[in-house]
Length: 125
Image (cartoon, rainbow, N blue to C red; front, top):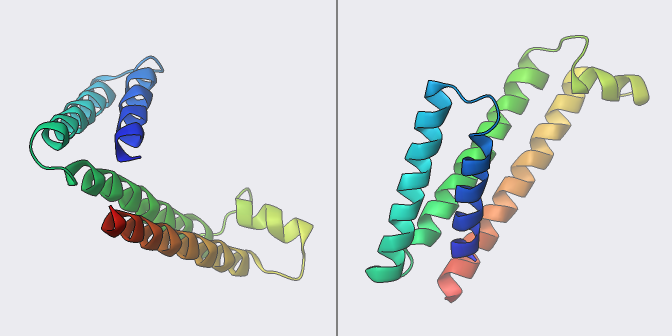
């Protein structure tokens, strides 16, 4: 599963180079591709669970950034065009910050569930 996720990640990074590439994006994408391919080679040739830790790190990092983004955009700063205001218009009983807190709780729950399942599946192999 980690090999498939790493290959998908590398392909997605390579495809994203075709959409508005600038020097920073090209450098970051190529750096992550080289790093991931290096981890794939190390995993296949030297240490077996090495790639699983990298994909777990990528998932936790992306999830942590999404939780920070929810906190920054929906809880601390509520602007008129945000998702929290759109949900507030649909369900007027919840204030926009309350909607942001609900989004954060759901994101934390899924982050915790994903981390737990990843660690359980890693220990079983």
